[in-house]
Length: 227
Length: 81
Image 1: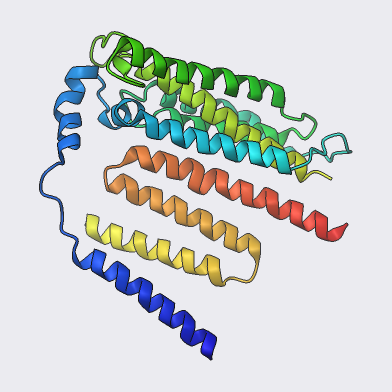
Image 2: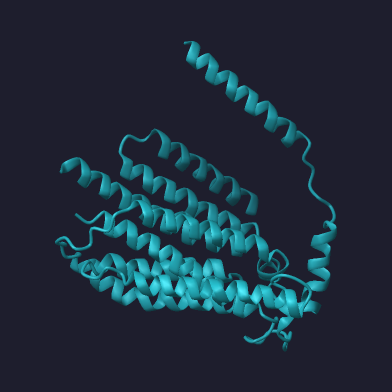
């Protein structure tokens, strides 16, 4: 009884905190100073048709670097704690899963690559495309119980793309306006695949990094669950 | 019309979230939490945020569900032997 009262008391406290926020909310009528700069100058500065990706990759590129670092930390902690038991005997995957994954895999994989490469033209970008690529690889990992998922390849891919990602950022610091400034490369013609400065390059590197990190995590979890 | 779809979707999201908490079997709870991500991503598309919707659909409802299932299978095997 006392415990229930305590829970209700805490819930009421949280509710009153959020009530103040909710009652004080009003729909914004104008863009903030940073947002209006992105909307009015983003297209002219970078030729990126999809302004969301321009913001995520360049203007707020440091945030994306932070997200990718958090993901990297999670993958490292998982591989530290989960012991690899891949050398023990394994059961076959079901026929249905093996056959279906062979049919579906190319489509999901190509969609992921498309989302990565066209981040500056259509919705998407490195992070989203990397997650889609990882879910395509997940199908292969689940379907083929015999492989251990070649963790060395993923580790090398992850490290190399991470180095080049930060390297592009430092190049922006030296050659252009600041860290991860995409204007180090030419803006190009609006709507082309190779336009919008370094955004396609950075997007591809983020896609490789996120895809290999997520795949490493899934491989570790799968191998650890295999007894 | 859009408002009606949004209200229905948010009710489905709330229902799935509550279902995931109160249901007895862990498998159903994982599926229900995946459904939360799936319907939330449809809501993001209606709110004109396809970038966020892609992430939510791929990670929130795809990869997270699989990660939960992998951990569940590991737990079961540890219990059995």
